[in-house]
View 1: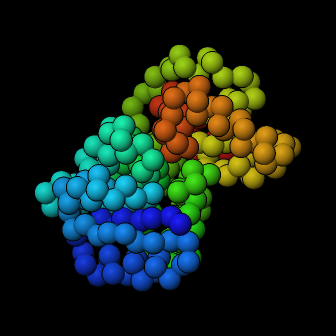
View 2: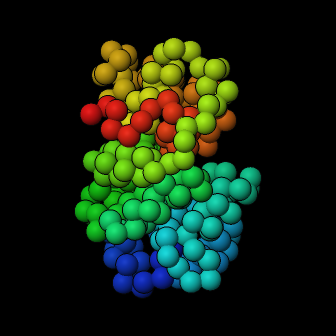
Length: 221
């Protein structure tokens, strides 16, 4: 069972998400928060697998709440998904830098929401590739000048190839197909990259790859 916490200052948004998620046998909404401070309290109390976190909330905004969750070793198993709208694209890159495992637009389709929660809970892929690839490219293009990262030197040539594809938003199956590998081998490569780079999840790999200049927006086509 995957447990979910909803953090949004709009009651109707929370109610809508709850009705969608609670209808799935493997998903359980265990709490709701109306602001970032309440979200932090509930995360520490309930230890949900996934937090759907709005960006703009009173008391404490979603980015700061996410940063505090990620910084707490006791909450290492909690994954945060930032909720945004297309007119708030500026927040997306900051959200990933803060440690969010991905993001969703608030008007996402119900099945896409369900899929996203399941995906990020198992750490298998960044959220909603159809949205992620476009928005990540746009936001990453606004990042500061690339800064070489010495940790990348620990990667093999194959691992660097895999990291590039992770940064493009590809799933393990898609990476396996592109590099002519088995899905299990692709998954093993990703696991080793996470360990070598001391990254929390795939979303952090995306940020690291862009900031280090390993990939550039839209390079995959």
